[in-house]
Image (tube, rainbow, N blue to C red; front, top):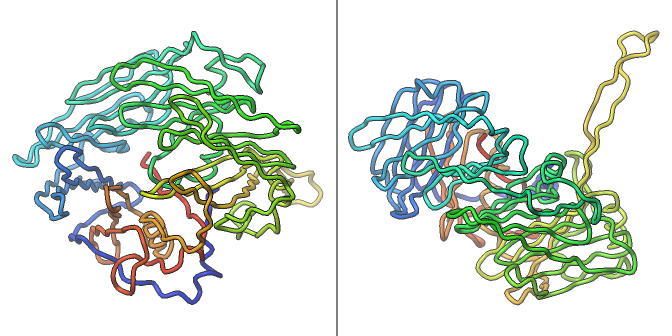
Amino acid sequence: MKKLLLFSVLFSNMVLFGQTVLNSLPLNLNNLAKTQILNVEDEKTNDIYAIAWDNTAINILKYNKSVFLTSKFTDSIGKEANRSLMGCTISAEKQPTLYWISPNNKNILISTYDLDNKTSKFLNFDFPKNHEYIINYFQQNNAFYILGKEKDFEHLLLYKFEDQKCEIRMLDFSSFTFTYKGNIKTSFNALIKYYPIQKMESGTLNPLDLASKTSKFYVVGDRLILTFDNGVTKTQAFEINLNTGTLNEKTFSKPDSENSFETSNSFYNDKKLFQMLANEDELVLEIKDFDSGNTIKNYSFSKNDTIPFKNSPFFVQINDRKPQQLKNTAKFLKNLNGLTAGISIVKNKKNSFITFTGFGEARAYYYYSENPNDFGMRDYYTLSKMVYFDAMLNQNLDFISDKQSEPLAMDNLFYFLNTHKNIKLYDALDLKTYRILSYYDETSKQFIMRKFTDGFMMRDSGNPIIDKSTFSNPASLKTIN
């Protein structure tokens, strides 16, 4: 379930404006059901690499920091067949290294490509016997990381791939105390089994169903931050040094209320922890400094309050139906009751865009029979519900009302994707001042790169959004699995 754009109503009279095309290159990709595109930036040189592969060949395109094509290498698919591409790193010799996971998730094929000599070489990595499953993976500082679960022990395993070597660090949580619903003790293994750890992306919109998850992790520089909100009394956080593997526990108490809170959650952003708590009568936001734990701001709104700084209406959405507006704060809190609270934040140079949400999902069934005389069989389906509204914080973390706020580069990018439904194969890359969308145009057989920036743009000059107040935050880009 994701937050959806309301195109049918809001954009019926809009004209799609021009885009900034950085590059286009003829490329023939076959079997698009088994095809991937991946972008990566060399953090040292700012060169950009685009990888596009299908069932017969892999294409590696190298662009300089001005996004001019400087090299292209096409290699046949052999050992990579029947695998999925997880990620890419760039070596000190400026050679891209790709990581391919096997169908059973037990082996990684590591392929390194020499673009100058047009050669490739391969290494295999087998996960150790005590490895149970992969939680997630990410690229950071030109290294590729996999966060995994160790079998039978209260450990996580952090795999670091760099310069064709793998370093494994054990993250031991056995000495820490974990509780469920505030005071019931539980093991670390049980906690992450019932509340799986979800990766949050920085600098972009996270889907609100993921933002409402209880267990999260964030990649921040050379740190990995894990947060657990399985109770309404505290947020339990762990700061992990990616270089040394050392763990540092932090505990953030949540504010009290005359009426106990029924749901709560948190979100880490820009060295701050944002804690949201709610019941049918009250919504509370507390902002804490992550390093010191001190409270920076505290906001509380009752069901009788009007929230003047809202930058969107209150919305409720059932499954993938069109969102419906809720009249007031009381209606919002009533619909939030019974859902898992969630909060999502993304920051640009000046302001922080924040979404308050609640999400719930249940499995239901009905009886189906081809013969009216038979009792029938159960046919299961999933029912989901989401409520949300948007707001904005300035640099002093004060709420401000600005319904005409300029769209972010991601808004313009998402808008483009949602108005070009024929684009099925794409990836996005976040650079310092803009975003690049790389995608494959099946009709023209072209590999295209487009640039998206923050702000309003006039006709034919770049961004398509002319009024951000007319839409709600869209869904996040898909990750490569």
